[in-house]
Image: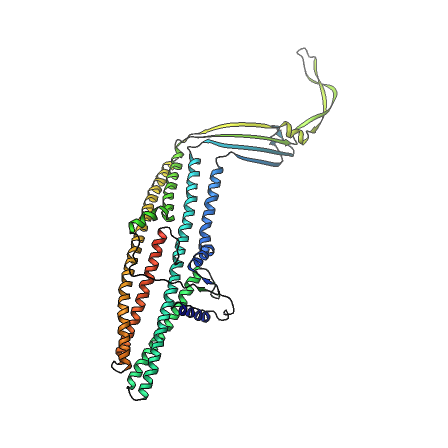
Length: 476
């Protein structure tokens, strides 16, 4: 059966991708498909960008604990009457000036807001990583489902092909009997109608297999013209097989390792830290700052030469005698740039305390919103846990039901196979008409299809349960 299934897959692939038969095709196992999807899926790569953003947020928040350091420089041209910032005197001519400064500040105490912000962003980073893992799990399960769908469609195609071959043999045999006059022509027309119906079933099975292949290739982000063939493992379900663990046992393990649950737990911690940050707004803020600056101005002059002039009368005494004062003529020049830069240095250190008294209820509203956020995160955490248990319970029940249906169908199939062989023998000797023969054959085909459905349903649900137990997806 396995060899025949390989041949069917190969022929089908040649019809999907003509011209690729000369190429060496890679046979993909389920593990290969999952690994390729995790490495190349664009939505996973997009999800990982959220981790990068959370990493940058944490880096920025962590750096806020350290002092800042800033520098500035300016070049100014002042026209008209203005106060020179260097000489602190009024100037009426054009004055060119420069200012240079460097400053630093650090928060000494801010209601533990920085510390809580770092803790919150660290939680957010960890939660975003678990979100990526959860998304990867969803992709892996989707790939496993698509992979099993191909196997299911392939076996259905094999059944349809085998049944059509049997019917064609009966058409040939019935045709000879009609020509010999042993059977009425109506028997031939009936069996030919059955042949046409089974040809349609074969076409539908081929289309179903093509669609299954296309679905898996799209999950893997492979182009339609990419050579693609999957491995067909031996999957046997034993009648004595049972679901290994109870839903509660599986849940007890899953709740400790599933990334969706861990992410919800961590986001609750993050919401609690956000509430602590909001409460920190009630506390005083103590900060320390320091600065150093210097400057240059064309209005700052120095005397380069002095000439004594004739005394100038500045008044007279009570008796009428003139009063003179010495008079000088000065030559000035602008103090050199680097001299001014060196002489104009100023330094300052400040300690600042800001005490919140009333801020239009902003702090109180922020605390209330974050308190609601904590409650929402707590509810979301419980929702995730409840949903996980429901999923496990449903998968466990589906697996149990599929196994029971498989065992029952297998027994029914054995009986139908014997009944069909008996009917076929009677049909060959003319003791059973064509309608009875077709009815037995259709019931056999339906049982074979039901057996396949229950088989792959059971295998898929067991894969999900194993996945929740932390086991890798594998059909080996």
